Length: 365
Image (spheres, rainbow, N blue to C red):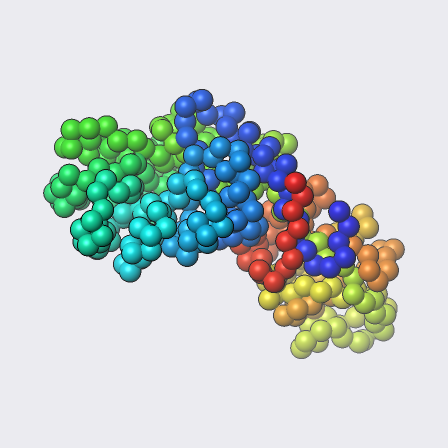
């Protein structure tokens, strides 16, 4: 598809491919939770969730309450886990039938109080344990107090989060996390006298530690086409393409400057192209001054000077192009989001989730 403006293309066939590839790594009975937080990693959470629901996904996960509400109001019926509920969220969690992660005694107290206030019995919730990421979750030595406060409540799942499952140099750390999670689960289940379903694997966990898939796995970045390892490039296909157009071409004389603060000064006659995309759209100023590049008519063009709020300029001195020609910031064939991100030593997650909602989304179904 040729862009006529700045646009994000959401490729649903690639999404289905990625889901099927990840499923191929799992036992047939293992459930899959799709992580659709942060606009589904910069895409559109409603579009992605509706497609995943058609593909019989078992669970969806969002970071915060409002993300879950948006999905419910768009007609999504699949169970939704809220990974990071806040103290005042439970009235709406119940109203929209969302499933909270209970990760601290403060949150647990408010949850149990809210259950009584709303006369809720057997309401689904999940308990998060900290096994080494040290971000959210109960510790193993919290289990006795936790069970005392839960009384007769039973979580639908116990879960934890791996901190370095993509890093082959951190295998012992990951295996230690999994070992701790097994120990925690065993103690918890012994004390309550029943078995609870579990999940700990993220995308890299599925790809590198599939033998520990438990009852469910969580797929985030893998669904969107990245596996944190080049060996999966042929199997996982990026679902997002960011494209724009050339608004204007300028001929710059030697000694003239381009952009704010004279961010680029021409050492020779230069031809620049101005693009209608900038840091307000998610293209960080860090990409400026030649660090970042874009793809135009089969060739790469470096970003000149400072990235502006709504525009950036690129060097097309040696590229045959004209105003109105398409520009690829990243896509699934020529130049991936990971490659674009690596130019400023960051990761695909950051560029994808930074993409502004003002950019038009186009679905390729």
